[in-house]
Amino acid sequence: YNYAQMLEQGAIPQKNITDALKWYEKAARQNYALAAMKLGQIYSKDLFGIPVNSDKGLKFFRSAALQGLVPAQNLLGQWLLQDTSMGYASEAVVWLGKAADQGSLFAQLYLAQILYEGAIVTRDTTRAFSLWQMAAEQDPMTSNFELGRFYEQSKPADWAKAATYYLKAANAGSASAQMRLGVIYAEGRENVAQNFVLARQWYQTAAQAGNAAAAFNLGLLFETGQGGDKNMKTAKMWYQKAAEKQLPQAFFALGRMADLGLDGPKDLAAARSYYRSAGVLGYQEAVIREANMLTVVK
Image (cartoon, rainbow, N blue to C red; front, side, top):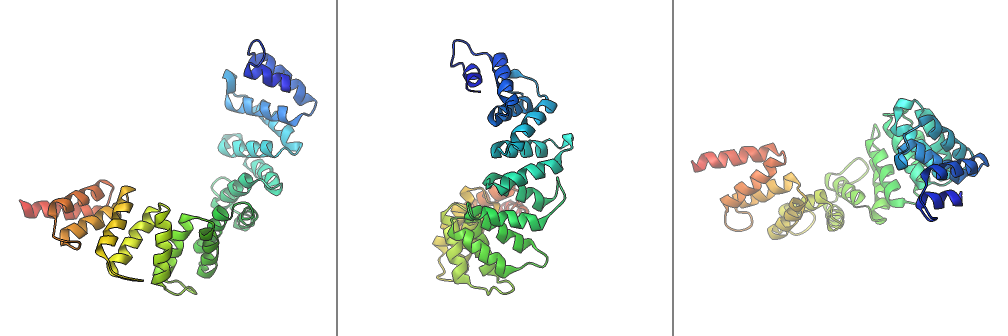
C-alpha cells in the first residue's frame, strides 16, 4: 500500500499510476481496507484518467466497508445515493447507518437529512430524529437546529419543543436558530408567549452574526418600537445591513423610509433607487411603487 502511494504521488523516480493500481490491488487482496477504499475512489470518480468502473468501485468499496472502515462506509453510501441509477439506495442507507453507529458525524447528519426528506429513500422521520440526537453530542449547533425544525414542521407543530431545541442550537452559536427564536417570540406560538423583548434580543444576536433576515426583522422592531425603544436611525442601519446581503424586503423598507421621510426629509430619488433594487430582486410591490412614482413625476 505504501509503495503504491509512492508510485501514485511520484515519490520515487517516476510517477506510475498503472503500477500503483497493481500494488493497491495486491494490498486490497490481502484485506488491507485502506487500499480497497483507495481503489473504490479511483474507479468511482475517474481519477488519474482511469475510466469509471462501477462494478470495480462497488467491489472495492464494499470490501473496505465490510472491514468496518468508516470513511469507506461514508464514501460508498454517499456515492450510491448520488448515483441512484445504480439502484442501491437501500444499501447506501445500511452503510451510512453503520458509519453513524460508529460515531461518524457526517453519516449521522447526512443520513438524517436523506431520511427526513424521503426523496431518494423511504421517509423515516423517527430514525432521522434519532440520528440528529446522536449527532448533537458532537455538533450541538447543527443537530439541535434540525431537531427544532423537526418539531416546528411537525403536524401539529410542537412550538415549545421547537423553541427548546432552537435555544440549545442558538446557545451553541447557530444564527439560524437565533433567527427562528426571534420569529417565535415576535409572533407568539402555542405554549410560547409573545415576547418582543426576547425577540429583539435574539434578532440582534443573529443579525450581528450576519443573518440578513434577522437584521431586517430587527429593523422592523426598532421602527415600530416593539420590545424596546423606537429609533428610526437604528432601524435604517439594520435595514441597510440586510440590504447589503441583497434582501429585497430591506431595499423596499429603505425605499419606504425615504419615500415617506421617516428618517429625515423625503428623498424621492433615493426611494426610487431602493424600490428599483428591490424590484430587480423580485419584490413586486417595489416595482409597483417605483412605477407609480415615475407616473407622478411625468
